[in-house]
Length: 276
Image (cartoon, rainbow, N blue to C red):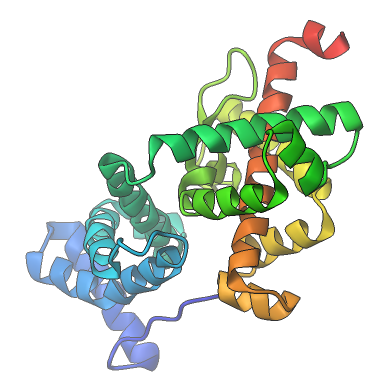
């Protein structure tokens, strides 16, 4: 889902004036050019905040997310290099999202009990999949967790409020690998470190294999949400289910992926365990 930005002049003239603003700001740090650039790209903040808001608890205000995101936008404007051939919108969305996530984490709005239960579901799902050699059913997962299926679904709904940061957790592909955010497995054309690039490819391959093993509906949810940019409500309309059910499917998929990638990381770190 692309977000198009237009200057009020429109067309080629507007594009040229925007390029002139970038040249002026980068050449001299002109505060007027900086302010105009921030105002021009401000709709990006509202776009990102709106997308993130749907996965957050009711007490989190969109206006707060916009405030956090503006910090990311300002940082993006100040650090962006127009000569690298990367679209500013692509660069800025990542910075805006990162600023929002950093602030939410700083506030620690997810209860510790919810984080703990997410880890339990993740661990049990991974162990069951390894033992059964297939994706466990909700009933099997609930039994392993010593809870009913209804309680599992209710727990997944609670955990879904924290799923916005799930792909931002840090991972290590091998024993000697640097930590890597899962979201960073999407190739960065500015990256120059071959070792980091190798880690990225290995993690991306592991993630791709894990996605391929997901049940069909969870696979569809992941594809529509992360690749096509649909909201949970829009995905529900596609699948013919409620937004709440899509949220549960999304949370289960993310927890399965986390468990699969972490299990893969452990086997790479200790091949003897994997052979055993």
